[in-house]
Length: 324
Ligand code: PMT
Image 1 (cartoon, rainbow, N blue to C red):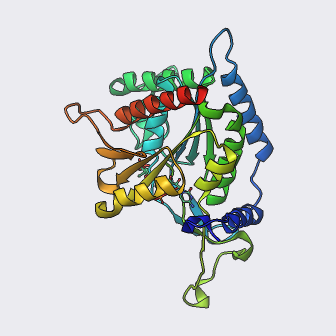
Image 2: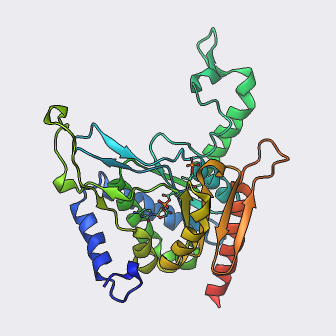
Image 3: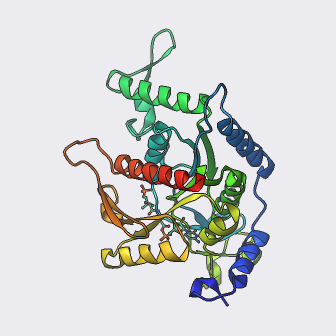
């Protein structure tokens, strides 16, 4: 029987997960990624001097793609600008956490919010002696972005790992979780990425570009197993886990978030509606529904600041309880 239906045996879900990983294309530079993770976690567990071990959070950000061809020309995408993940990363680092930022290539990056997006080159000019200078209106923003970003990287508090496809995302997430297992309750997962629910298994995927001359496209997508169960049960069972629930229909949002909390035994589920996601979210826990809003009296405020403050407080209580 399947645990997702509330019944007893876990085998079918485990088998689905195994089959997903067995059929996925091998992850490029898997050994290099595992080495970086090991070094990052070791460094933050035993920081130089007499510092106590840092808490480590894995922040996932951006949407995963589902390729339709092995030599991919076309793909299905999941919406996420990466704004939530990038901004949350900044607040976690500010709160003293080390962050493993698992992000979709090309999405928002930490410390880049106040830089002009289009085009970034607008920020710079070339002077007569060929040196590059920052143009006046952007000087402060560029200075802040560069120094905060460099401080996070040089201080060993930010490790960035990119993904594009659902295969890369789940393989890297598994490596991260297994590397963080020994951190126990000091580990946090903040799963803000928008993850595909359906995919084409690698082995049944067309190798070359699908030809339109063959007529209408008839394609069967298989369900992506929910990895939250594996994460919670096996990969990092002591970690503090926060998942997200995104809906466009506010009437079903909280009910779906509560279901996810129970089914995957998350510590918190952050419920957000697509159109208001930058203004407010509702944090669902075992016995509360906490509305978290952006401070609307401040033009440049964001909802991530009070959200991360709430999460850090709850995680601290969890660490304390686990030590007893
Ligand atoms: O990036 P922005 O533009 O700032 O927008 C932020 C956001 C709206 C994308 C973000 O706040 C958010 O809600 N992210 C989760 C979106 C999502 O995929 O929701 P879901 O209901 O499909 O999945 C719920 C949870 O299950 C997620 O935490 C996901 O990581 C997890 N999941 C999903 C599918 C799957 N096969 N396995 C999973 O573990």
